[in-house]
Length: 262
Image 1 (spheres, rainbow, N blue to C red):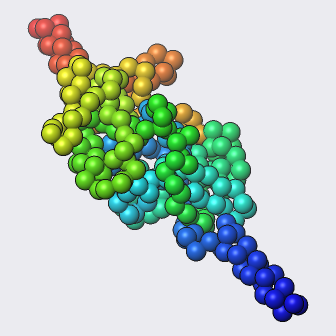
Image 2: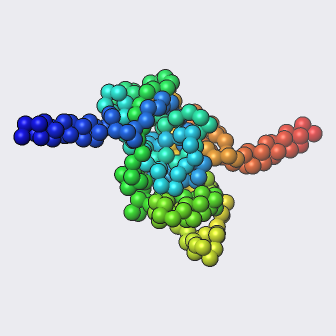
Image 3: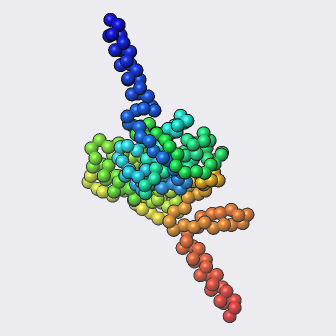
């Protein structure tokens, strides 16, 4: 009986080692770098998720493997949404990088640095639902700019995104243009969504802009979409304005100066 008992004991040790987070076959060593400006190549809306918990990895965004975990050698671990593709680095949100590296939020104790060794694992998508701010944790996509990605996921049998998405009439990932309303998609009969205000309506979206945590300072900075700038007003307070409006003001100023001089 003793050899049989010993065999069971050895088997238990092997099983325990295989299930250990630090030695699981599905974990991979990566070197994570900080990224302080939210973006999403597939149109995931930053105002509808936790933008401080995002991964920007080299591989294309998956229709199912959008949830990952990163573990620092210290044991600190975070779940992240993998919803953008990088040019080659394993970038993660600056605040996430700061916490994993130091144990502190970048808003409290901002640090600077580069690549940090971490263990990476794919997780079931449901484990990242706490990072999504929509009903039932559905992935929020831009109705006008996410259709290529969504169509590929709808065409992939059993994909998580294909069965767990919601479309909004917001044009850009940092939520500065559009209307904050949901849209309907009658797939596969139609490949364009229907929105109450009209798909792709170009109006300034107030109060929804993504706020980034600035690298090295921890300051909160509003994201700006293409076609916008930052105007510094009295007391050094900045506010967004459209470049078209700024050019219009300059033209009027030139006219006034010419008339006055004349």
